[in-house]
Image 1 (cartoon, rainbow, N blue to C red):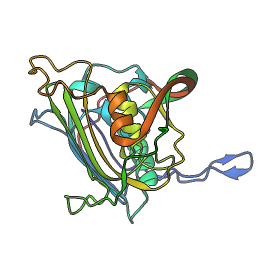
Image 2: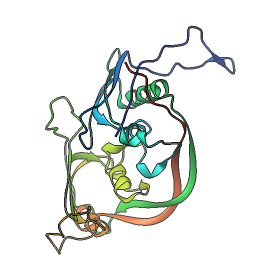
Image 3: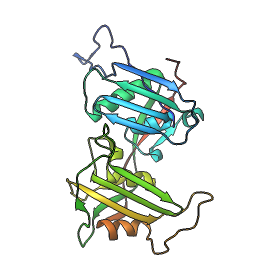
Image 4: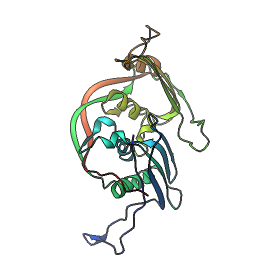
Length: 266
């Protein structure tokens, strides 16, 4: 899915709000955004302290990452090119920065290069609550050991074989309230289910997650399930992880895009 980045110039004079200078949004020192010509499916992202690199990324996907939301939380004025056109990005800050600060820089780049304007809305809606099952967790404590040298936080691997889905994730947090959402199990489940998952497990450590389930629908042309004994996602979560999902209602945050345009060439 498409994407975008670029540095922004700080205002020459400070702006004051209620008598206090407004904070200058963090920004990348240098950034490159180029239209991808590869036509490759999917995309690749590398997020390291103070740096964001990616290939073949759609703008819609970048918005999801920058604002830490799932696809079901994004709506508004989104022309077709925001999903069909892909971009290659390389952006870095002057010095190392936290994941949260790096994502704020990404938000700033989207605003500057794609003229992105948006607003947030929080509404009560259907959610799932994640708790520990009555027999306790079945996950072992684990540590993230990345197979990619310069991506220390990328320790998950998912695979789809027809209707059979697998998720193997080493050293994952159940939720990361102040970090990169897609690196938590709750966020992964939110995206899979298309509904916000609220973590109420009370688990604060990191765990090794090995999950195998049958999805409700297989991709077009996919072969039938190769294992009729593979359970549904809800059953698998309880039997294999010792966790439980319960339907409820709760706050759901939405990002509504008001305006966006194609970026100018670098």
